[in-house]
Length: 444
Image (cartoon, rainbow, N blue to C red; front, top):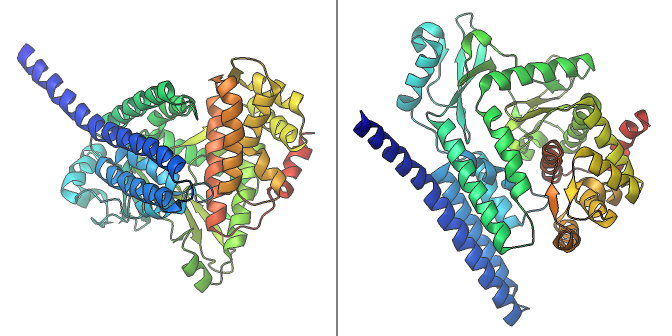
């Protein structure tokens, strides 16, 4: 028995090492190349090709790593591929392809898991089941099927063993973030990793995802929001690892050519998306926190109905305490009105801690969070704006580092970042300040 336990432990150690090794190797290689690039730019300051070559090569390395590793590594790569507002075009082009080109797992691999979870054979549980997935993501893939009552459904199935892979990926990301903090002072990734640790378990619990979808759908219905479609959950065909829901017939939100062919204005879709998230975050305190292109669809009008935005994958959702929601509104108002003392006091109340109490640090954090975009009158951040913010942020944080960051606000910031990237992809012309002011005035 002891020998069996030993071999099982050794087996998992090797699997864990095989998850760690490629990620660590690529991360260290990129860091070394980046250091070399900094040196070369000092020697050849006018040679822009050096920078382009580095970023193109790095983007391809990240794509290869993400496709090979999948799990949270792939999810992180997809996130950065969605940030067209701040990422260089080399990364946006390469990483955005990961939204559509995730290699699917074979039916031979997935069928036993579905039958085990639903306690029966596919042929007896469903009237029809298409064995070719309609979507393959970082943690699961989705199949199109029909219930015995002939209802069209989507069946989302976790990859076998993905729970262990998620925890191993968190370990390596955590290790690399701590290592980075010891050798670099430009930005500290540890608060982001801490937030990742907190939210990862919910993303592999489909009971949580289904309940979150239902709750947000109910809240939006009470608000009378008609331009959003959220799938209904079929609980009798769902478990912690299999989630069955109504099937949304829609167009990927970033498929601008198809939207144009149908006469659907992407700028209007972007405008509605901003409205939707203002309502969810600032009014309801309940929001879908993963608005990347793979989770958003445009549903063409049917029977004289209006165009709708389809929202799927509620694994990363957040329900804010009312007090915290109010604090976000106060903070946003203070940022808009450039009130440094109120920014500082609100951030401290929310849970921010820095080495020394310094209003400039909190003001720089506020601008990085949302302020510069709102005050600019633009629909989204751009690379120059982000560069200016990062220079200031790096300067103030090097002399007054962050000790603690509230995880809920990080998730809000992550969501707003994704929306900013989406705004650029949709050619948004929305003035964010104009959109956000009514929600600040309501609570004034």
